Length: 342
Image 1 (cartoon, one colour):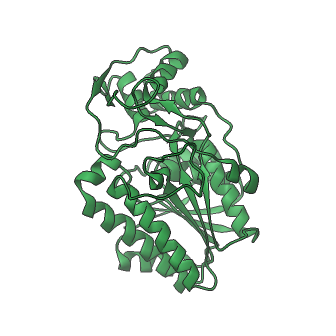
Image 2 (cartoon, helix red, strand yellow):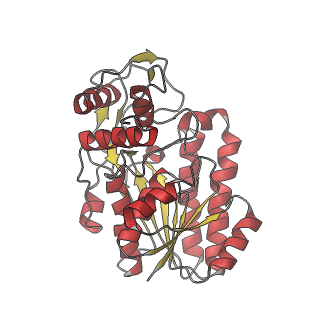
Image 3 (tube, one colour):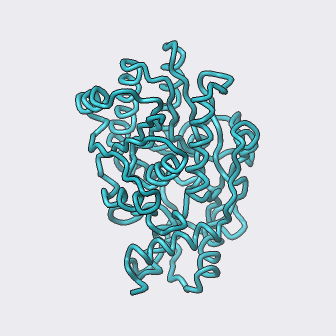
């Protein structure tokens, strides 16, 4: 059984990927500092898979903690690196917090991979590396402009660090998955998106508003050059995204990669406005949302969606679930977590 280290393993995407890894027959070690996640999520993974992943609480931005972690783990076949701060708006306010955490954690993980001769690395990247593209949809060869936010810049810099590390080492192979906008929850409603404090992402803000936890959903700007004035994003179901990691992992483990560092867009190939997401949620749940239009949020791009043909062709992966599927699953998770049906 191949042993996979998953950093950020109790986070939103990490927990769903752990579930898919276990169901695919991998042995998982989840690592997290629990700064924006809850250890209870491991119980949800066990309810789905029958297996509770091994967990190590570690601050990967701390070099000594990271060294002790890797020294204690024994043989690891691959690392999937999610651990990072991820709120665009917060990164504009607190850039050094983002550079310190996101870059130090990556460097510490890569250093320890080299020391322990761990060969396979999958990086959680983002469509924010494309900024506001001039041409849509974006491909993996689209220009990488100056970043719109410190968060986006950490993803750009991280990919450069990975590229340089791969070139300098004889045995590390890496894949960077540039996600678009993950939404939804596992169909069991045992795990889902559970941000600490006020959500920075649209869908948990929607579900918390529907649940009465938030009085009103804020939509940041309606004066963009889009069909209804609100920003356009490519919303991908988190389970589809998790499965992309299995495809990338198998490609590395089976030594099918054609270069030492490969990059793939992971999206649906379709864009939706924020208001379209609101209306779709209302349609699939029957709940009317209370929302207001506010000022634009610093760092937000106007519109972006993926060309994901390379992942489809190379990884034999394709997003299968609809936006309606994702929003209904997110609401089912919110209801179950808040015990709203009792």
